[in-house]
View 1 (spheres, rainbow, N blue to C red):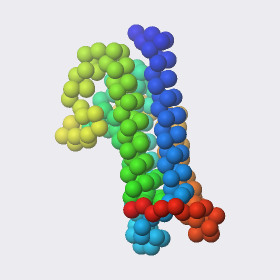
View 2 (cartoon, one colour; view 1 turned 45 degrees about the horizontal axis):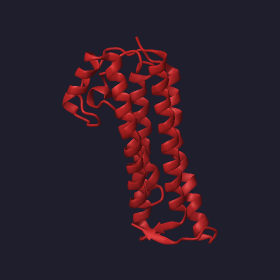
View 3 (cartoon, helix red, strand yellow; view 1 turned 180 degrees about the vertical axis):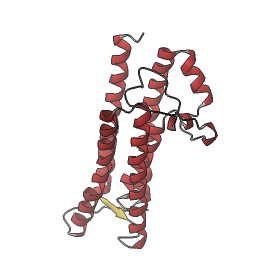
Length: 208
């Protein structure tokens, strides 16, 4: 059985992850506020933003898909079907896509890549802690899953699914709501670009 201390520690790790990610991304946003792109607001700039929007949509849909399988079950059992048969951490993988999409709304490939690096670094430590907890909690069952399924992947040859799923709407809607927050990057960075054009925000350097 999971002890209260083990459950608390896992929750603490998740809270630290959210704070660390939030602070790091805030720093990246501040960088975007004092920089612009080499190519200005032309066709290439708009193309990067469009690709980023596509990545955000994929992230929102993918994260919601993952929640159908993992919602409310993570601490109760080893989920190894659907997206979790392809990757041990598909929710985080889709979050990487969302991070790229958010950064891409600046029109800068550098800032888009920076957002992804921040997410990968923060989630790397979170994943390590979670895997240690899950291994201690589920023992050989989880160790077997760990051995056959890539950490991020995906490995499509491993695909397995279920005939039926027990859906918990609360978890699905919460994940969907959290994913929709990525879309706020569009008005935020459009406002930044407008403020820079108007001369309200100084531009100190240009990034690719």
